[in-house]
Image (cartoon, rainbow, N blue to C red; front, side):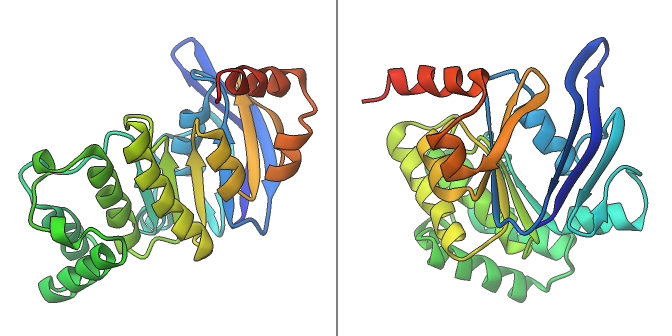
Length: 246
């Protein structure tokens, strides 16, 4: 995965959420974005995913350049990027199976038979086959989130983007989702994840960005960043989290 950010700024009205961010990363498989709430993590992910346009600056993800925000390249980008949010975003009136197969049919031009086969194969792989005919209200939070991840995988996405996928889950359901993402790491699936799960970020992310107050305050290889933080901001952040861990 290649990620290049050049003088990236994002404002909402008078509020500057991201402030002149630049970074150049190559040959990474998984990227973790950490930091305090309100620091700009999720906004950064949404910009990288092409869901928001930057106020200023340029973004390159692999061979895609997102600064234009229009045209065939942007459309192709959106068809090849899988995004998972903490709210699941499943259609409430559709079964788990149709939540995924319908996307494959309408957006990716698969036949009904092909779309259902892709979906069921993924359900089987991740232990979800028994839930294929259930609607979202019949599923637990962990099951809904894993189905949302399957939907992002079903399109054979080039890169998977996950925005705090466990934020709304209890510890048991969180472990289900983290285990699934861990499997993707073992399979060398490229992904970018925003998370508050520090132990998990350290385990699955090759590289970490620590974002605070709209800036990338510190970045580096996961092991080095967690074991030897250089900035006072990151030291304080990790210290506060670890203070209340068992």
